Image 1 (cartoon, rainbow, N blue to C red):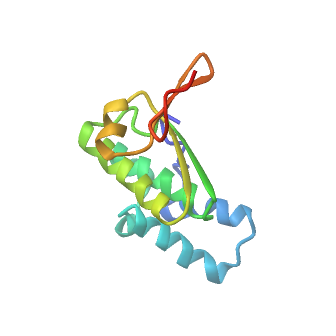
Image 2: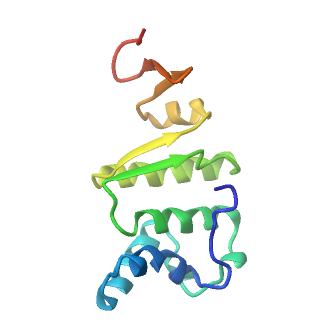
Amino acid sequence: FQDHRLLADRTVFDNVALPLVIAGTPRRELGRRVRAALDKVDLLRYERAQPETLSSGEQQRVGIARAVVRRPPVLLADEPTGNLDPALSAEIMTLFRRFSELGVTTLIATHDVDLVERLGHRRISLSGGRVVADSAGTEAH
């Protein structure tokens, strides 16, 4: 989402905790998991902040923490760097690389091919809904 879909009436902690609350995660485990997710995106110091007090990039990272707090096996990100400056875009992509290193399969849809190539990620190109190139293999036909 372009506006990160954070709940303005809840703290950063509560926004990240929401998927765990919905899933019925025991209270004793909730705090540890939320703080670990916030730490991964370097926002632990903002756990009691309201989302509107954060920059756009920080709000984006809260959304990423919320997406990974349940430790999904697959993470899909659609244009996660679309409205961010180049430095912040590289930072967000580095976060995705870290999740990938932890065993989370990460699929990122982006038009920023240069960013993906600079970071050395595998690139699969689509045209008309078909794979036309894959940097891990040969050109597709």
